[in-house]
Length: 633
Image 1 (tube, one colour):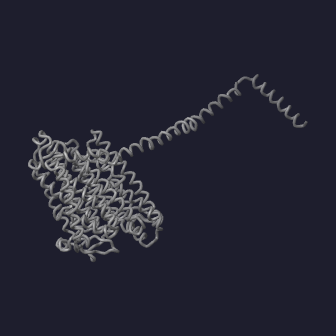
Image 2 (spheres, rainbow, N blue to C red):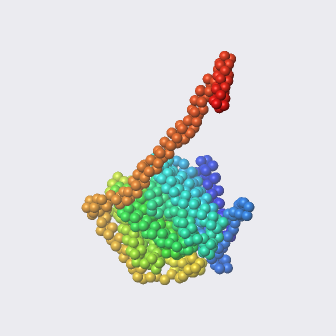
Image 3 (cartoon, rainbow, N blue to C red):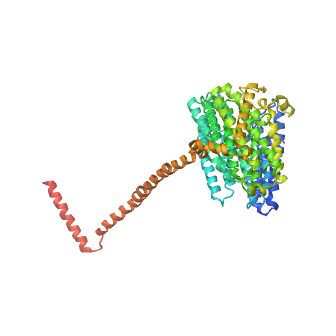
C-alpha cells in the first residue's frame, strides 16, 4: 500500500460504522471485535503510509492524490488527500489512542445498553478525524469537521436518559457551532480572495502577497474562531468539562486524539498564513496563554476527577497554541503527540477507577486506592508525572521546547505567564493523584468494594504508560534516526522557511521546568498528603471569594446564561411580538380583514332588486346633470 491509498485509513472504520449501525444488534458481542479490527488495521496501515512518505526523493513528501468532484464553468472542484509529516504524525496519534480506547471499551462498556451503537459511532468518529487531517482542501476539512462535531454530540449524549448528558451534548454542539460559523465565513472569504479551496493554493497566494493584509487577517481570524471552538479555548472552553457526561473512553478519545486537537491541527496546517498575516501569531499566543492560565486556576478547585483532567486538557491545548504562536509547528505537534499519550492514559485510568468503584468519581469518596488497584495506580502515577513535566517523561521534553521557543519569540513576559500555568498543572495533578490513590480511604464502603480492573482495561493503560515514558525521546536526533526518521521530530516537521533544526537541550530552561514541577508537586504534597484537606479548607475559608470564583469557573456559565436569558431571549421576544402583531395580525390578517370589510360595504350595491337599480340610475342621472350645469356655469 502506498500513501496515495491513505484514504483507506478512514474508509475502513467508516465502512465498519455502517455495518455496526445496521447489523450490530444482531452480531455477537455487538460487533465490538469489528471495531477493534478496523482501528487496528488503520493503525498498521499508518506505518505503510509513513514508510512511503520517507521513501520519497526528499524524504518528506508531500504525496498527493485527488479526484474531480464537480466543475462549474471554469471553476473545478477537486477532493483529495495531502500526506506530509504533519499528516502522518496525526495518523499515528489518532490510530494509537483510538485502538487503546476501543480495547479498553470492551471491558468498560460491558453490559451497557446500545453497546453496539457505542462502537459504531466510535468508528465514525475516528474515520472523520482521519479524513480531516488528510484533506487537501478546506471544503473537505469542513465536511469532516462537522462530522467530528456530530459524533461528539452522539457520544457525549450517549446516556440520553440522563438530563445532564443531553444538556452537555447540546452545550458542546451549540458552543462549537458558534466557532464553526466563523470557520465557514473564513473559508468563504479565503475562497473569494483566491478562487480555490485548495489549502496549499491558498497558502501560496497568501505568501505571494496576493491577498491584502487587512482582508487576510480578518479571514484567518474567522478560521481561528473555528479552531478555538473545537479546541475549547477561552471563551469557548465551557463545553469541554461538561462533556465528561459521556462514557469515560469517549472522554479519552475526545481529549487526546480527536475533536479537541482538530483546532490545533488546523492552526498548524494553516500556520504559514498566520505568519504572513500581521498580528495573527500574537492573537494565537494570547489566546493560548489566557486559556492555560485561566483553566489552571479553575482546576485547582474541582473535585470530580474527570473534570480536573478536563480542565487540564483545556490548559494543555493552550500550551499547544502558544507553541504555534511562536511559529513552530513541530513544537506544537510534538506536545500534541506526547499529551495525547499521557492524557489518554490518565482518562482511561480515571475510567478504571470509576468502573472499579461503581461509578464514584468524586475525590471525597476515594483515597487509598493504589493498594487495591496497583496497575491502575502505577500507570496513573506515570501519567501524572508526565503531565506535571517531570523528566525524563514525555511531558517534560515537549513543554521545555515550548518555553524555549516562547522566550525567543515573545520574551520573558509570556514565559512567566506560562510558567505559572505549568506550576499549577503540577500542583493540581499531584492533588488529584494523592486524593485518589494515596492516604486513607475517604469512604470505607467504596474502598472495600474496589478491585483492580481486568486485563482488557489495564493492558491499554500499560501500553500508554510505556509511551508516556518514551515518546518524548523522539525529539533527539539519534532516536529519530533509529526509528527511521530523518532525525528528531523538529527535523521531521518544520516550516519551509524555517527549515529543520536539530534539538539541543537548553539547560537553563530545563532546570527552570524542573523547578516549576517540583514547586507544584511539593506544594500539593504539603497540602494534601495523607488525604488531609485541613490546610486547603482553611485556605479556602480565608479567601472565600477567590475560592468561589475558581469553583464557579470564573462565572462563565452564569454570564452566558444571563446573556441568553436577558439578551437572546429578550431579543427573541421582540422578534416574536413583531411577527405576531405586525406580520401576522397587521400584514396578513389585516389585509384579509380590510378585504372582508370592503366586501361587506360593497355588497349593499348589489341587492338584486330592480327598483333599487332604477333609483340608483335616476340618482346618477341627476348627479351628472347637476355636475354638468356646475361646470358650464
